Length: 425
Image 1 (tube, helix red, strand yellow):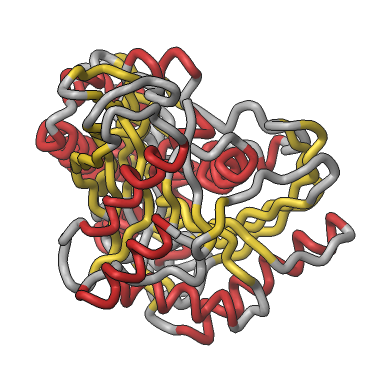
Image 2: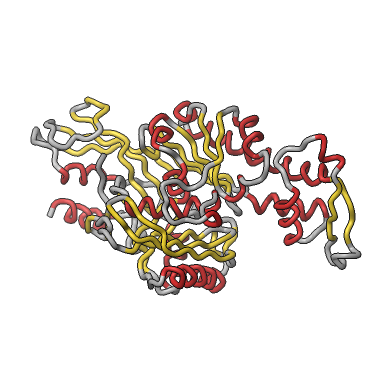
């Protein structure tokens, strides 16, 4: 495999031994920063972790710049204190701006000459001409395969000869305004964005094993404000999607159904919740503090079964939406029988069993793998995206990425002339 990364017009550089790499996961429920030191190529050790309850962020969208800035700053400061290092550059996830997947085929002439890295770069760079909308920004361009003179199925055409080089690309875009807002918020925390990685891509990198990526699998990350889905096959990310439902919606249902506060609803979900009921739930009683009442005298008793019924109804809806999204992707057959669940919302008891029933696939619960230095508290499914950002930062680049300074498509005559000059001079 090969790939091209861009930093402005420059080729991305891999971190060297001893370098510091920082990942920033800006989510709807929490903000997490992980700092790692590179031990050897492709391997690193976590030296600092900081996380903070997310404020000013709802359903993957920044709604209060100052509050979001405070959450990000607090998480980064905690990680720096633990690591004993000060960071300036971060790899950040992108869950806002409604990221979209597109299939794109590029054709470039090579005039019978040997295919070079420059020809491959030109083929990948043609994704910048994709007209996905006037307000869309290119985030990733991932090569899925190449062809030479209509001979498909070529993984690496470098060194081959032909007249026409074709590239099958998976392109991910997102709303330009949301990206600019995120960039501004992070810049106000005195940080530079080294690169952006869409959240489902990062989660898949940290949770899927090599065989799953090669044979085909879907990684489903159930977060607080929403659920992201990534589909991998033949070692590549081929599709990403999202469902606007997550753990917070379960908590909100409990609060409304039991007439309790959101804080108590979250506590009840964690202590007594389950994604599926069983007969014993009818015999177990729980105390539910009521909104506006004293916690001791204003509680009512009810069966655990009633709580579980509320949770199960929403979890069933989430998995029904996930199944529908995978079916719409066009890659349902590529997924085969394998789905991997991660994220904080998958930690309820019996979630795996409910997912298997509704998705009709083999399901496993995953936590970040191949990460040295993460303790038990920070190594759970809720930290999969942050761990995946680190893996993306130190692996061999395999896609064309957007950086903090690239936020718009190259469109219009002047833009296309500038693109040609960068590619050919």
